[in-house]
Length: 371
Image (cartoon, rainbow, N blue to C red):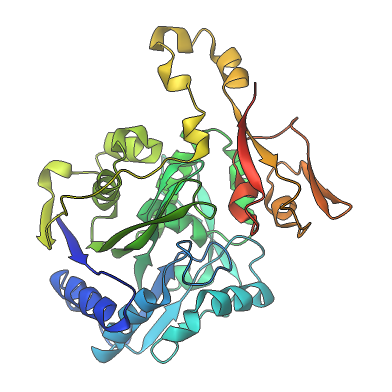
């Protein structure tokens, strides 16, 4: 399956459009489409951040896809996403505005339908159904537009992880609580991706994020647009570009075990892989996780001890906290409350999902090992 890579040195609208257009042409997506189809563009809009931060899909990337489709006769193009926080008109209008999504409005409309539907999963899945936002359920064709990042819980965020934004608003923390361990949560993400089934995934890696992603990390530009019909092999490929070991990313290992990843069949089209790539800094959660260094024969007998001793927890930096309440709103275990305009954490009940760190706009939450 083709993996397409084009170099884009900066967020210049013309350069982005040229690279995106070449990628879509290489994938021959017009053979899939008719003028009456409803096409859904699914960017990463995890929180309200300006485009110059490496947090969300850049508006020039979204606009380029919408413009190219429009210029090729597709008229019903919708930008749809459920960010962190409530899935409401008031919240999403603010997210669209801050993230620059109005850039694409000459060619696409911003979703203003905040309903969702229960969609059945295939037989044999752990999850029998998923609640998925209406614009995704009702789309005829889905183009997945993730931002390339490291991630505090999953280690890597690309095509598969971006589809977590298909779940409405504050129902996402409920899934964190239902699947608190990385194996269960990764399997849920994988099954969700197999239900949503985007036809194309185009990754914004012009500027990517390293460290405490998906929102608290720092810039690590790759100057690339990546595109493919095979999202699973694409995530494998993108992880290697970041200097990560794909088998160490649980959702990628699980995808390999399901036969979804085919690195031996991958054919690179477009530009070559640069020789000067540098490895991405891992999240603090991974730097403090020493369980992989414990001999395998000891891990099972001492699983409970290891889980307690090696577990990482969120730690508040009070001087940065403004008491906005985003951490408490996103906490699946409801162990955070706001008192005297500061967040207060209880360790008991914490599932170490780091949703609080993800949604903190002030980067006031860091990671600390249990002991």
